[in-house]
Amino acid sequence: MGLLSPSDVEYLKDLFSKEMQDEVKILVFKSDDKSKCEYCDITVDVLKEAAETDDRIQLEVYDIEDDEIIAEKYNVKGRVPTIIFLTSDGVDKGVRYYGIPSGHEFSTVIQNIISFSKGAQPELSEASKEKLKAIDKPTEILVFVTPTCPYCPRAVQLAHEIAKANENITSAMVEANEFPEWSMQHQVSAVPHIVINDETAFVGAYPEDMFVDYVLQHAR
Amino acid sequence: MFFVGGQTHIKDYYDIIVIGGGPAGMSAALYAGRAGLSCLVIESNISGGQMNETDIIENYPGIDEIQGAVLAEKMKRHAEKFGAQFHTATVVEVDFSGQVKRVKLDDGNTISSEVVVIATGASHRKLNVPGERELSAKGVSYCATCDGHFFKGKTVALVGGGDTAMTEALYLSNIVEKVIVIHRRDKLRATKILQDRAFKKENIEFLWNTIVKEIRGNGKVESLLLENKKTGESFTLKVDGIFIAIGITPNTELFKGKVNLDSQGYILTDENMETNIKGVYAVGDVRSKRLRQVITAVADGAIAVTHAAENYFD
Image (cartoon, rainbow over all chains, first blue to last red; front, side, top):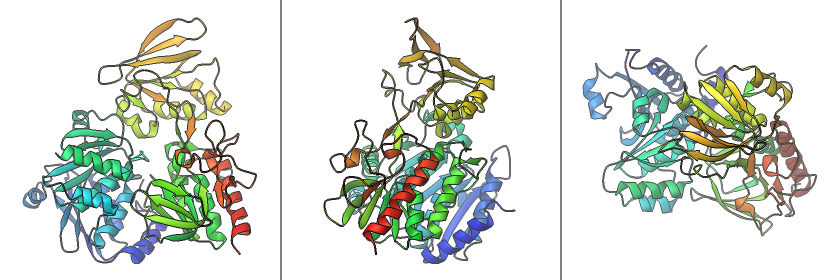
């Protein structure tokens, strides 16, 4: 049996047939070295299973060493697994996953498949989109999560919507267990833990307007 | 495990809006769908509410044991099967003044409905001791399933003595080196079977009649200042983290002045789950009642929507 149950597969087929508009590209960077990447195989496998539920989902799997040039183009920095979403036109909106999006996080992958098939329009209030226009420098949002945290997917989703709203912003889920040193560097001991431009901005699940205000504060 | 929850685009009017996607809200949505009513569930995080923080649920009749998050996903899928829609957003304002109710969301949407079911549940209660706020997310946690991983091989304190506290202690005992349960009484309030399991665990220790006076540490939790209530004696305990499970406080901030609350802030309802405002119901942990469990939550949801269907829709 696959990683997704037959009923999950039926659910996704139905959902995607109703909600997807165009194609979506998912790039995944992996390493075959188990000591470097415990969860690469399973990440690739689950994405393959999800991609099989709709023809419009195009999955491209790259090896971090063999496909060095493309890894560099997308600034993967040796992190595996890395997942990147692109629109049907190949537009990179800065939406990333570092580590496996398992457990609750997988729902955000499903959301992004639908969103990118529709051109990755940010699902934010007009007020938030207007505020985010002010950001004119490269800004990176990292959301540290654990797969068993029910408060994390909403934070990841908000971070991703914020990235879609402004080309200067990139945002990523970081699975804390797979990147212990990175987590230690930011003293992550509770999740969701949000780092903006290399500085801890806040910890916890905050509503949209507060999240956006934190991004504006730290982007300066 | 992979949860494949998805969202569909939403309309601006539904027969019933359910605020909160825990078991009470999802049961309400299931009954709404089966009654032929359109229903939107607005959830600020992941559907399932506190079930998602419960490692194993084993008191839901007919299901021997199931992970809380899995039961949550099943309930969501079940409600969706009968037509309920789910939307992730935080409600920022409600207007119950007219016959048509209005709910404003943080993502800019405003949605109207004939009936609103409040199922916002409850949040973790805080200890309110010095150091708690300062060291929050620096070793102070309210969610073992969220943050337990960060304390692998370490010693943590767990404050509380109820079902939630023991469930969390047992969950943590599988990850950390040692769990020290700090409880203000000389016996636990938790269900007998959970007590027995906790007493059997070699790496769960108990400090009875003890309260936390202060959480100490420089940038992260290092120790606790405790007091034995019987002897009055104060002492410090070295720990790497502290998990707090001392009960819940209702999520009713939005509804103050809009519906009647009891002295502790829980929403008062009649036996049909209806509040003092016609067409506004409250179900689950947010409601003033005795027993707060998944099974009483789902019962509330069913009762509320059945009553609403009979009285507000033809």
